Length: 249
Ligand SMILES: C[S@@+](CC[C@H](N)C(=O)[O-])C[C@H]1O[C@@H](n2cnc3c(N)ncnc32)[C@H](O)[C@@H]1O
Image 1 (tube, rainbow, N blue to C red):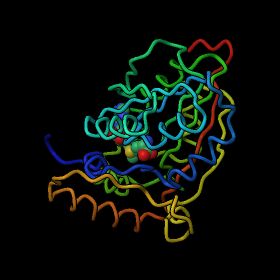
Image 2 (cartoon, rainbow, N blue to C red):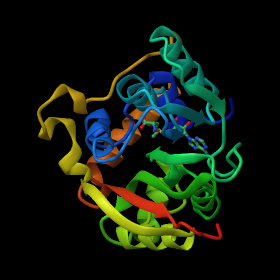
Image 3 (cartoon, rainbow, N blue to C red):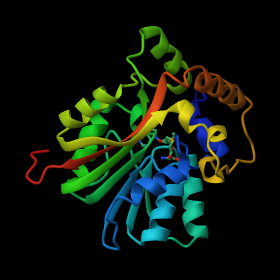
């Protein structure tokens, strides 16, 4: 492993529900969808697999999960094995998904796209959806356009090149060939902080590795500092979109 990154931190700490609102928000959003045993769901950037496991356990639907990080996949695999859940887990890059076109009814992405190359990942989500299929993407969203300096500060901690506003996310999803794009949920980072809400579900889950590089704690501190200083400038949104019935994508 070269330079330690924020993604390595999440993997070493084994953080599940590594997105604002945690698994509680995920459950709420999924409750609005029609999920059946035959529904084919793809969880892109599944992390330690908390959401994929929830989907398989609760709805019994056909879940496929991909992540780029080997340690994330290891922790996800251990979870699925322990719970005896038939989740199909693969190494996969959001920028180049290892599936044929039109494979999934629902593509779910939680706090992943912002770390990818948006010009590649968003069209990939659209490609692997079947016509009429649904995309749900929960992403870090700027509450107002950020300055170059603010973006640089975020880049230093998260490696993100852009942090779009809500209007920019919607525009990019539309440009990727998706239809009926709308925001189903959202708020500032401040509004989603665990201590401002009650309920243990909002707190992330931890699955710590035995050996943790001390450099990781430095990144954790930076993350905490940036989260606090940007808590009113950054937020999250859950975007929902559909692939057109006779889309050319
Ligand atoms: C903030 S975590 C979110 C994990 C999980 N979705 C959750 O909500 O707990 C981001 C995840 O995206 C994965 N990731 C980052 N870039 C990726 C890419 N290009 N393709 C696939 N996964 C990626 C990371 O390895 C990490 O597991």
